[in-house]
Image 1 (tube, rainbow, N blue to C red):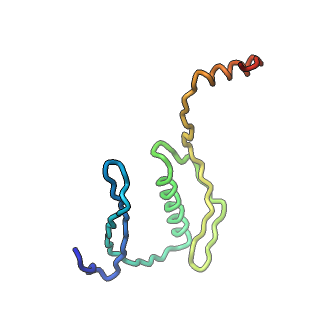
Image 2 (image 1 turned 135 degrees about the horizontal axis):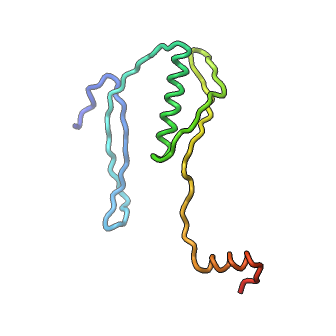
Image 3 (image 1 turned 135 degrees about the vertical axis):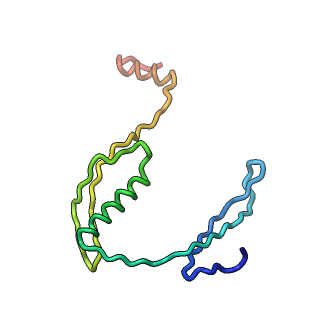
Length: 123
């Protein structure tokens, strides 16, 4: 509604949406405000549990950035450090992902490629 949220720890998220008419963006926007309740939780892990949790979090973050067809084929912890109760890992991931971009070849490009192959001058 129009009142402040009744949460003890509320987080505010603003999303600005442009307004368009007949495909033309108008110089006005509307703002959508969302309130979320947040809760601070402190967890205590052993060093080994911290490394496992950090590795899982890194794997999850990487999966979110990759396409659905991409696959993590390997991972290796290059360096781990525990300082002030925090775990810091440097991880090398091996990922199999198709990064090819399809492009059309026009007729002129094919003829120029054929000439270059046979060392003929272009016209």
